[in-house]
Length: 319
Image (cartoon, rainbow, N blue to C red):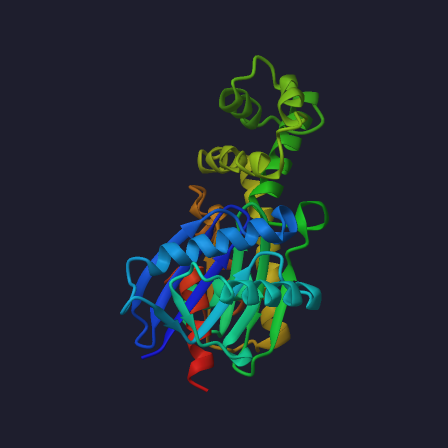
C-alpha cells in the first residue's frame, strides 16, 4: 500500500490530503497561508507542516505513516527559482522529527507545480483538460494528452486578471462614477454601491477605496454588487458581466487552439467565486464556449485542488 500527500498552498490557507493508492482519502488537514512570496519561507514551512500534521494525526498507521510521494501545488510557483526554493522546503519537511511520518521519497516522487495544475486535476479528476479560475484573480490553464501545457492570463490585478472579481468590481465602480458624472447612461450601480457600503453619497466611495486597508481582496469582494445588479436587469451591469465572460471565453479559446483542436472532446472546469454569481455567468460562459467548440463540456469541480495534488503524487508511484 502506497501513501501520498497532496498539498494545495494558497494565499489564504493550506490544505493537505493523505491518500492511499486506492484513491481513498485517509486524512485532511488545514492550516494558514503558504504563498512564500508574500509571507516568507519560514511561515510557509510552518503552514505546510501544520497542514500535514492535521491530515495524518487521525489516520496514523502503526504509529507512523510511510509517505511514498508528495505533490505541492503552490500559488506563484512557476519559475525555476521557485522550484528550487520549494525543493529545499521539502528537504526541511523530511528533516522535521516532530512530524509522525516515515519519508520514503525519491526525487522522482516529489512533484512541485503551480496551483492551476492541481485545480485542473482535482476539478476534472485527471491531468487532461482546462481549468478556468476566476476568483479574486483569474487564469486559464490547460494540459493535453501529450503533456503539453498552455497558460493564459494570471498576470495579476495590475497587468491582467481579466474576468476576475477584482476587474468586475473595478469596472463596476468606474461605471457608477461615470454615470454619476453624466458621462455614461444611468445605472442602478450608483445606489447599489451606496447601499452596500452604507455611503451617504457615491462620492464617498473615494474614502472607502483609497483607504490603506482596502486592498485587492477587499475590492474583489465588491463584485457581487455588480452581479446582483446584472441579475436584476441593469443594462450597464449586464454589459460588465458579459465583457468578463467574453474575456474568459477568449482565454479558453486560446488554450484550445494552442494545445488541443477544434473538435477535441474535453472538459473545462470552472473554479472560483465569480462562477457562483446570480447573473447566470456560468451559463453565459458555457453557452459561448460550446457554441464555438461543440465537443467541449463545461463543468464545476469534481474534487478540490488538494485531491488533484494527491492524484499527481500517486502517478509518480505507478510509473
